[in-house]
Length: 256
Image (cartoon, rainbow, N blue to C red; front, side):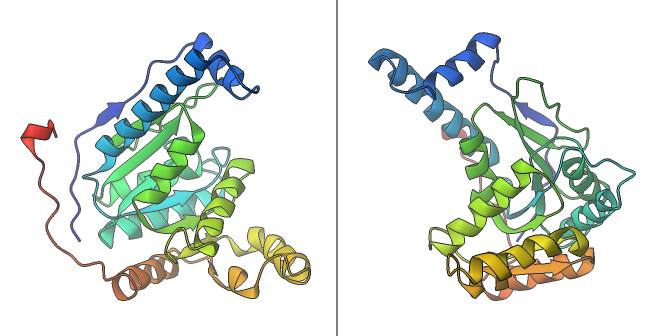
């Protein structure tokens, strides 16, 4: 498993108020065939651009968390330590590319000399990429962004967050539960924040038989960045056979 320090690279689609209205229109029921065909090509183009941009990143761990928790929050410090530890363990650190917890994890990776990657999202109130990224890919569509954050990751660290963070953790857990993805480790950092959530899962969801106890047991909870990194490193090496080695070679004829 080898890390490659990348030069600062930005991949960003053009955005305009008209394009935002197109997305709203698409989600407002059936549209004209021409409109939906054009939309399909835009989705394919963005998906392909993401694959091209991230293919040579190397094995990564994705860190999820709130954009609203800044440097004064203790969770910012946790994320920064986790990012640093992951980089020293040989992983690229990937986040949603924004401020808050995402910035902290990218900052830790950057300070440790590791690869720091962001999958940013275009929003009506623009989310600017944080300044600790070696590579940033900006997406228009949330679902493509989430695929990229999952596709290249051997583990996930989740710190406190809001609706977006819970969407990400539940989608990742669902992919594992349904066998669409292998059982990569999910680590929850910040035990005080997560305990009511875990209690709800145990006392309501498991008790109601809407999930199984194994769905709760998959979640590794800690306040220690060292424990979080070691858990992911151990699972990646022992369970999935990840090895330290050479990066894939780029091919000039593919314009890589």
